[in-house]
Image (cartoon, rainbow, N blue to C red; front, side):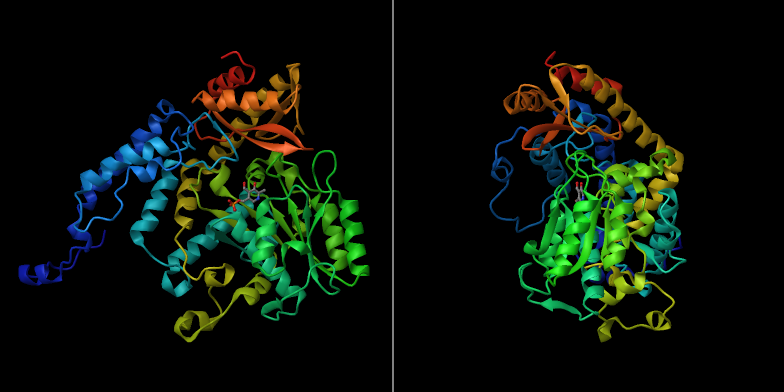
Length: 493
Ligand SMILES: Cc1ncc(COP(=O)(O)O)c(C=O)c1O
């Protein structure tokens, strides 16, 4: 710690100390207590039912209709966390949480988040906190190597990485960069473009299994949902590359302008992996931007034995994955790389006078505001840095391998159980299944699991049939939790 400047005289101190000044709140005392509370919560998380049991409106009914006029004692505020908040939580860090995809967290990451809030800096420009920018560039280069991603995504080459809040935002940036590249950097999109029946319309492609964020991003970027072509999938639910190629050819023939393909590495429903290499060939032939959405599954590439999921990624224009899903970095933290940063920056950069500064003028610094939608940005690199350093690459690989092994055990049990049907089995941390007797029977399993309080699963539909998804990824999940889930699934509990 740097020495503090000499204390000002008492009167000056009183004059300058507002009720909102940091020293008017016993941050040290209450902060220690809050950290203890979080540690107790995480250590004892198994005592809570995974899913909340409150009715809609319960939380608001506990709260006063109007805010307090006079400030309240901290003890009273903190005690309301137990009274109002805890009963209405889904406990995402619970080892019985098998829903959606995980959003796992860890002590080092939580402290990184706290430090980021404590420093309270804005990293929109290099000059507004050089550490915020340079640490981010550095850990994104680390991540690039850790995931075995191509060299040209490194900051030393023409590309580079940036931390976004979510995969949805990363894909939106890719959509805008692709749109601008396709329209000669008109800067405004194309104004109102017609739908795909209008000649000249920009057209994007994703598989019928692509995440909903792709359509949302295209709507936001002015492309419109009508100009998203959903490419049919093969039996493993991955995009059919021949169908994609023929759709692009048809659109070109019809006078449209195919400009973007979003490939999924690990679809949300079943973890299907689109054939990136084959899609890239069509993209190259027709000048489409290829974005890879590896939001959850990409993290598996921490382990060299799983890197086949990235086959062809070196041919992509951009790629994203979420350390906030499966790498113990608490939400939010999406890692986004582009092959050519100049295109992204040109698409997103607007430089008003009030942001001009000498460092930017030199052209030697990164200003991450030009790599994202908002201007302001949090110091997210801290939590990524702390997490990587605390666990090391081997610790993070162990986590992925443990989850994949647990999923493998469960998959084998499902395959051996005559009443259950494995759905689109893969080799990673997601297990999909349904009951042989149909949707009602599958729903009954889901209700039994989720009603138990010991586990939570979510669902999807595949070929119109209800499917139960078991997504293994909680930080402390162990064999006994999967055993308990299995007993619930097969109705033995
Ligand atoms: C394949 C895929 N893409 C995108 C997303 C959206 O992620 P985010 O919440 O980071 O926007 C998800 C979320 O589960 C996903 O599974």
